[in-house]
Length: 260
Image (cartoon, rainbow, N blue to C red; front, side, top):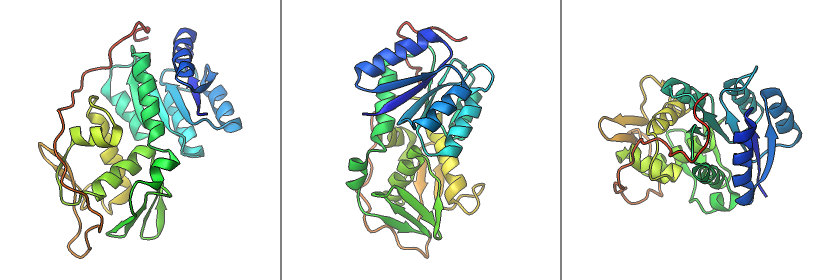
């Protein structure tokens, strides 16, 4: 059974979220502040952390930094802030996803399941053969990526995003399609894709400011380019068809408290 660590100083929000998660079959641990969350995570590593951004004392961003420094545990940030910069910062320091308050608890459970599904061993084992391009080797079964023999530290989403791009070399893939295929969402904030591409470039490109592998296709999305001197991946899949367009509409409220 997966254990979810819920970190929120508002007892009402924590109770509602805990109730929905438990009904969905998860075990739940709760913490009301950052230090308590770090102690619980160190003593009993959770499968995933739901982390409020606005915590007393040590804020959620610092907690996320410390969690990510200790290990690859998935993190979904809960934020009452409407400022896009705060949400993007959470993604840039390693959060796998974020949900803005007020949110639908049912939608939150679906987000949790989506993040966990990306890391299941049974899924990984059938995710296809390994790929090697331009010094980058991706092993789906081990969920490991190396560049010139050096292991890269990728989050769950970064790994899946790189795998998807490498399996479709030379194809311009819309952000909506990436959100559908990598995140498993039919809707959402497309800046999530943009931030993850930027973080991924910082890890796989020789010069992230002038990317040679993950190229921006203006007005469309992104394309993985194979250098002329490198061979294309042997297991490239069929061309990607555009899905129904995603939207950036906010997650609907279901009676949770508003921004604080």
